[in-house]
Length: 496
Ligand code: BES
Ligand code: ZN
Ligand code: ZN
Image (cartoon, rainbow, N blue to C red; front, side, top):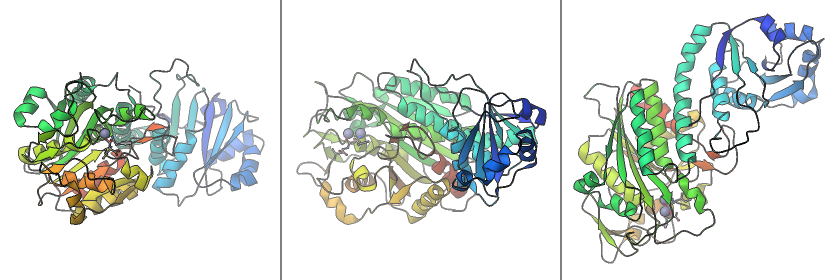
């Protein structure tokens, strides 16, 4: 597991700045030197002022930085100056933090962010970008025992304000850790163990085993895992932060720890990426961790389906007919369209065992969503404009891409089966939509429901603004924001 690199807050002390032997980052707001900047500039014989007036600095975008190495008059190894304006808002501040974390080195790092109101947002961007998954690497580029300090005017206030951000970063790191783990390390059993450990943050955790799932009638979910040595499991995570009569929001996650395709085996190229097919489960786990850490005042339930899709003598076959928990039969045309077989039973369970205010499911469900939206946006499908708009609004605030796609009735006929109530695939066209239509068959019409296909956004091939390549942790911020703005603060009375 990765430790969270949060800076330590220390009291402002110019003597310490002067004698600091590592790296220093300094904010330049509105191209003016702060009082610390003026003092540093004096020590540096005016070099700081010259840098601020240079074309190099002028060409920087808001939030970007410039590094001056071995500054005269100071003890420091290097000093980074970062451009910001007093009108800069949240998202620029996060970008600024992400740029500060690009100031690499292996010496202690001192952040001089002053008493800037958006300091916490800067640190948030910094920590998101600073994430590494180095568990299995022998050599590390930078020694990892350097420390990060943030000098502030009021240590206790800064520490208090950092708690909220820390909860979101912890949740995002948790999602990234889970999604980055290979399948030989994180099978269904190990995943459920990591979920059990969440009891320490105050979540109620229950794990259902195969016998219990059979008893409940989750044959569709069980059919996916029947070719694997790893037992299928369902995890139920409960956060009871609100009054008993507040209906819970239910978050459902696809947790296919490895998706080989099953008997409809995937081609070899890129198959290794299918260790991330538990991205929906990882996301639900991360959101639950965040809301528990910040002691959310509402009720949320996470339902996670853990299975492995493998070819074997016991695997389900193309052509098999299975009976879902709802009672509808499904003809399995393609065993690689397994995510929907897991989710349909979880959706039905969510509605029959609880009284949800709304259900949101998350899944790395289709390659088709990547064809349509690339890696910039997750695909959103919903039977409720209110729920959908709430999610879109929260995603915009948190700068995470989501795009709504249609769920029109006309797509439904593509799921017709010759011998069963439905087929598990809908043919060559509109693959992400037919997958969503399949799920909708398991949602009663009065229940607000959203399905988010995160196949394109959960795992990225190159590094990005807020993190390295690999698991992105997409969605923890958005759904946490949704819970705060649209449930806890009751902007929207329909949920919660
Ligand atoms: N897990 C995959 C979808 C996926 C693809 C996730 C690429 C992340 C990256 C899913 O189970 C799958 O295989 N879907 C098939 C469905 C098809 C057989 C109808 C697909 O999209 O090809
Ligand atoms: Zn598949
Ligand atoms: Zn899959």
